Image (cartoon, rainbow, N blue to C red; front, side, top):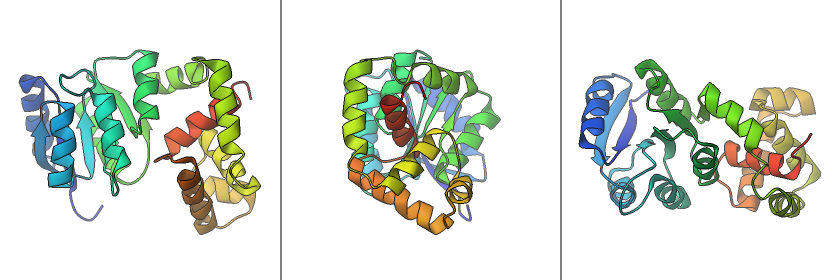
Length: 220
């Protein structure tokens, strides 16, 4: 990106915030615009500071990171959210991604991994740690299997055939260019189908589309 990514840090532990601020604040590609100590403060700070990316903890008082992410992503325009947390459980991972998070990293991630993730999500590319990716693929459709599958199939029926093709390709991890090649479409056309699917399904990013597709077809 031509200008630094505007970053908001959210964590209830002041020592963690200080450490992250020290580590990330000196990175030329990032502009640390603010900090928040709970989810409610984060929602307010996003509206005041207009960050590009929010680095969000999960377990916080007043409003936790998952609820704050859902509230932030419900607004438009909305920043991307990366969960940076000590919680590596499947439940937290899926809740965060369904709320609209574009990334999920554990706090033991290397500094360069965190910076790279911030830059990637700012550019529109979702980021998951390798461990989180394995968890997602293993468990995305396990919870409330039948209910989620019925709901997902009904939602996907609202799409055109071509929009469903694009969503399925996203669930397979394909980029827009790869989808265009596979479906013999232009990249601009793929982006249009993607945007239309997100609007129709009331979703905010590719990860949520992939989860929906996995819910609909848990055993492809």
